[in-house]
Image 1 (tube, helix red, strand yellow):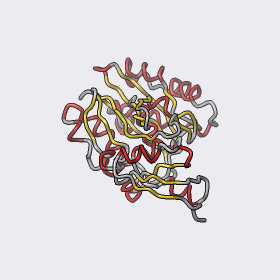
Image 2 (cartoon, helix red, strand yellow):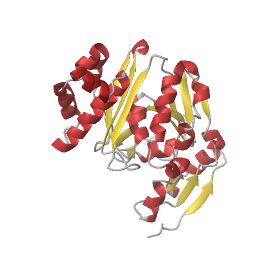
Image 3 (cartoon, rainbow, N blue to C red):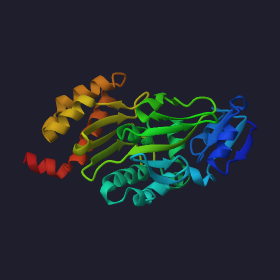
Image 4 (cartoon, one colour):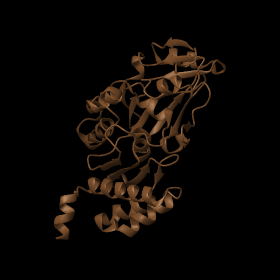
Length: 293
């Protein structure tokens, strides 16, 4: 199939994009890399009267420190993040955060997709299995939503209200993301199960631990809707380390957060949680086997 007819406007800047999106009655859709929107248009799962292409808006791909956070422009591609576009702004004191963001970007689909796909495009599409949806929730990021009349920040944990459903209002676009600047003591884990390389995850987990900031988060993704936080388990891991990662503790936490999943799916999630936590704590599978022996 081919897409239904639509008008096309290539925005040269954020201001151009905002102006184009201000006419909500026109059925405007924002086009980042087109890796999700393109196929959906072709299958006519989505129809648009106009596409506003932000891929050429250079001011939407900038990276800078702002208000104690790292601002990442929404038009920045996954490949740019994977290749270290954030490293200079984060510098040495936030090196763990830079490594986490590079790792997450590098696990998305294939390099050809990462070359075109954008941070804002992934978040605004709001696929429950998407990597940035999970990672930004675990990092407690703030999403900057802009329109012709206002700019507001929406917590990543509140941005996605359901599968493919977000807090974006008519006429708004996602200009960028503000990620807190974690310390050099930050530790992180990120693990997902895919049927094959490049596919969306069937189970995923992100872990962020930063004792200096009092942060301990374990968040699971690839659910039926938004990611879910395992707050109780995270607090136990922060206080007890690997001693808290018992089979029963993980099983109970996952069962409560993923009630709609069947037993097989929950087992996958449990395994993702354990592996992400071990990664964050610096314990690999070989260490576990050696310790048991």
